[in-house]
Length: 111
Image (cartoon, rainbow, N blue to C red; front, side, top):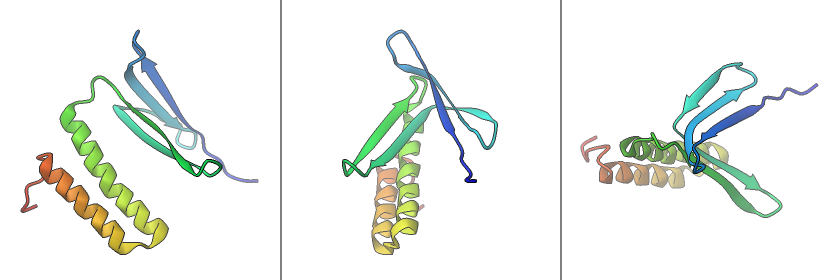
């Protein structure tokens, strides 16, 4: 017997099909939570291509979106390093993430 877990997203849309609210749940927790944005990437091995779902609510603040992207870049570097052992490239990705954060006003050069 194998273990499985379902992750579900419920996207509430306005009359123009713009996301107003995003709820998500995982079957192994039983909890439902809300979020303001999703960046979901799936690898399609048949097409050798990435499929993406990028959604955000109209309530997502610009400053929060900047932080969301910065944190996504840094966590992608962490995941990339764990998956490939490409330490140097992961380090460069983190450096880019820090440059991004500085240019977006999220970090000062001293941090």
